Length: 395
Image (cartoon, rainbow, N blue to C red; front, side):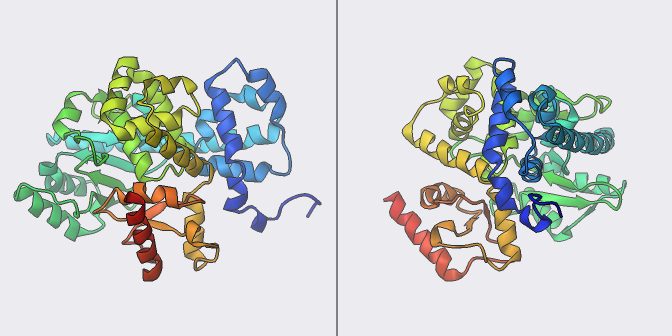
């Protein structure tokens, strides 16, 4: 192996995480072109850290937005080729997801079932971006809770089967009683032998302090998705921003893609609507402050509370630390990379969603939170210690 070339074992997530700030700088310049184009392109050059940078770009899911600005990488042909390759792969993946989305939505539409596409190609459509910008994951559909059973039955006729049939019965039973309890699964996964899974949602993720968006409200203001023959619909920009902000908070800001989404959506809805949302929805206020790292002009719409800005600094550090991936490594290595209590993996308790907020100041090296249902739960003693410290913080 040539001298100076890192081995495969050296290309760890930790090494990639060191490049996250560099990616954020590239995105920041990309959002403010052409003012800093010359100085930026001169500073970006290929070096022995290139593989780690490309790995971080892939994990942060920002290859497509960076690929829109090739002038940033004129002095770094290796980086440019790597980003272009990831963008092309995402484009191919997105085309298949658009076709799958169109087919599923058309099938439900013909049966008289209303459905909204969440995230993925729906998020790309409402932002006016190409599907490859967001369409690389599963297909997320939101239906009215009263239509869950009917939706599962109709999708079964084209090859989708529920991963957990008991969950379908539980949701149907709760719906017939007129109440969906918080402990019921928030989504139902439908598997297909040849296509990507469908995550079937029947309630929208939201912050705990804001009135939820009802399905009927979202449907009335929904927008069409291009390329779906008029069958696919998704959230309007304002609802998409509220959902993206809540989702980023739930995911503990584990990728810079969250920030890119929020910058685009915040710019779309206009100053008046953004200012109103920042006042009424704390998760949007936090998200806009975090997004101001890429677009400083967004801060004029926030409530500017000290607590919001303190949480935003933690969220931005989480983005730059690639928080989600080191945790998965820890699960595989038996917690080998946990060096102190401050770096312990924190689990989000579904029945107490504000626990994560209370714990943020306690974590010096931010990491992602996971559900208590994870197959490798925290040792009881550590979990008890975290909960006690959270109570002390709230006093």
